Length: 137
Image (cartoon, rainbow, N blue to C red; front, side, top):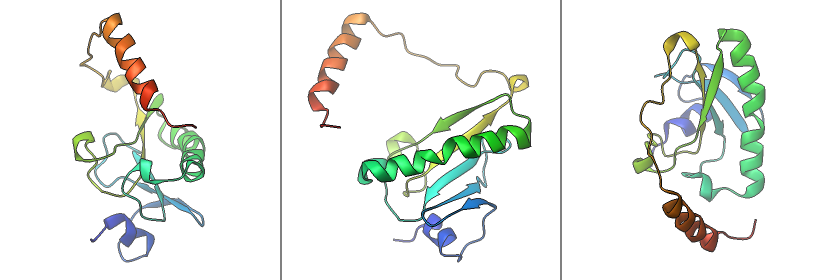
């Protein structure tokens, strides 16, 4: 299966590189949600975050604050969102684990318009169900 992120990692596809080390690269998103939208990508191909070891997830997310600080300074953004999608239903477009860092600007308004209103009893039941499926961390 062809993977554009694997091609970028291998140097077969161009990208606007921000950072790289032995295990990760950081690039600007070619189709940004906001100016400065960046992607932190592990060099090793895995489709979903649940396919990674805990140490690999820790290593991936350890890059986020470093990149976010630089983005805030470089873009003048007022804040940022962190996103990490898994599977088509979650809007994962490229099936290679990656973390989105999306700068946000007060002048652009609040992007979170639609919210659910959950009932306490429903939340209580859902919390119990999720706890029952939690594996030892």
